[in-house]
Length: 133
Image (cartoon, rainbow, N blue to C red; front, side):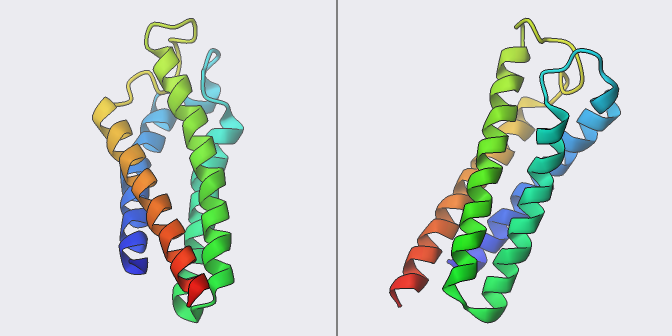
């Protein structure tokens, strides 16, 4: 299960990468009216990569503490992702409908979110399992 979590985590990063590229291509930080807080847009992938590094450390050491730290990092990442997702939903016709991210493909957003949820479930289940062992 732990390597499935690793694969899902990597797949989520691969699916999220193009969203960051679209955001930057369409003006990103320089956009006057945006529904995406720059700090969250930057912190979301950084926290995810930091958590991934902790997960790899868990895989190398088998220390359950690292599994729980990776899970905690994912909680932060998921909350940031939820902020971005709700802002993206509101932007389609809402009062913040202008700015970078307006052209995000819905399929990419859905795949990234679905794989992220799968990742957090797998990491959580693994953390529980290795703590009981």
